Image (cartoon, rainbow, N blue to C red; front, side):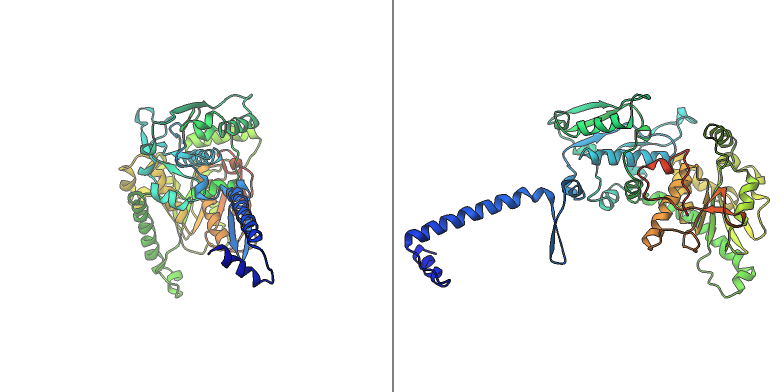
Length: 442
């Protein structure tokens, strides 16, 4: 469009300008458009959300929710993750959240196939993607945390070794300040920050329960392990259907296609009882240990349990030859452990970590779960089940019947049964569900 055409257009608005005036107007419009572009670009780091014709500007901290906020060219490396399955899951989640705070991708860590304090000679690393689905994790946790491979590394800026402090003088505040300093300045210029020292499970905790829960939801077992769990659950339900067909429960017209079962994480082995007794003495809390008799009595008193139910006992291998754990149950409750169930061969061909993962899945899928509120294994199962219930719009199980109910047998509840149990998702850190802590919230 030439200058004369521009001046003619100006007459449409009732204005009559000289060519010189038109030139000035064009210059002003050009400058205005230039500054407008600069202005909008300056806010692009805040992100914009369109919702119902409204444009909402987000703060930089909330903008980290976008996947672009998690850098794919800066990485965090952590030590091999050790101890039991669920301690390893907590350690992994803590490493993910640390990487998120540093705005870095977490390099895929090594897990441990066995308990190092019991099987030192058998301890060997196992890659994360041999237990959990790597691509699936990144897909589910997109825009929150990011997992990377060592093949993603370049050779531009090298590695910075960052040692975590220890001892009483290394407070939560000092730890947090170290992380903040590492997220900027000269340290942040390195391609890799390598955390040296303690296992991430022992790191100070700076993140709310809901953030851990979000990471846990992204952990999906590889198909090989999931199929092993499928075999165990199918065997339990198949026996349950046969049992129901022989009782009045099956004759009442109820469908036999889905045979419900109760899973109990039964901690009564000697080393646990020694540990929990010491813990009771130190913490001056009497409701940590539970005898086999207390467990059987309280489970039998669960309100609404029904007259017939299959009970799967998730117990330590040391108890598989102790037939007494199958005795003393209320009539109608039929207990099985992996040996009596005939699935111990499935477990034996795998390492300790994989065996735990199978048992975790079996307990997690149960219609009713009963565990010990001071056990990390039980606590993470309840957290996962709580998430399912919350997605159904239920935030408390007090006074109502919910799907996937959970109970803590170490605390007496209604009718001398076990206490109803839901994880408090509003807690500011994971201490409430970590090993040695109590988290009961019906």
